[in-house]
Length: 357
Image (cartoon, rainbow, N blue to C red; front, top):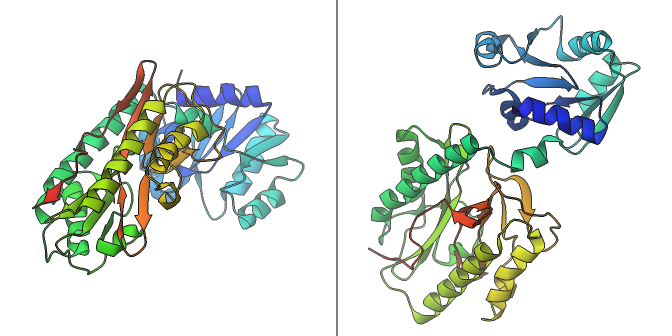
């Protein structure tokens, strides 16, 4: 059963007559299309792909064997072609992702699709995309391999006098030179700035005794990796070692809790309880992790309110952190596959505290 058929079965379960997929991650998951403009109308027993004239050749190559391809034009825009197709298919209702479609786009559809119910819903692809196929897992594994290689490569730059931005650029260059893309803009923060969970790389130069946190990931064949490691420049004091070991213990506890059937908030609690033993839980200021796949922050969250039930073949980030203003911060993140036998860590970069050079 391909992804399109899985969605059609999901629509039947949800009582939806048709769904208009506009999110590009969903479009690629459904069709394999890699362009920047694509829409798929999916009904119970048929579907159609739409794009514009820039992608005529590409769409026919990537999608043509799976679905009919229609090209939108100035004289025949998407809304007008949808109106024609809904009449041909006898559709009375079309669902769409209310988190993605703009007000103006919705207005255009309403003008053309008179008499058709346009129904905003939560993305029906979300739950399906969270459970990965063997091919998807293999792509994530390769993205993780490239990310680990980038970490090994960049360690040589961790020395006094090197700017955060130099490390950032080297990570980007290395991954692109390997034929990969960036899953997201790398984070490189040092010294007191390492207390910024999502700080941007700056011209600040590394100094002896600094924490350096690097958060980055490769994107391979449409799938992402996400790795964070914190190292120390020159020498680490006792307080730095204590905090690092506490974060590492919290991460290990959370990974151990990440099993099929677990509830998201309970996995998050495993990390927070571990940090609480060291009096550090108040410095953990974000959720434990997120789903990983076609986008780096894919569907699903592991946080203090998550009621989501973990399933086998899902891939999650596990990334506890401690951030102390004026002192610095530590985050340790791995990508973890849930299997029937337990969690499998896909990223393999070392996690013992590295003091460099």
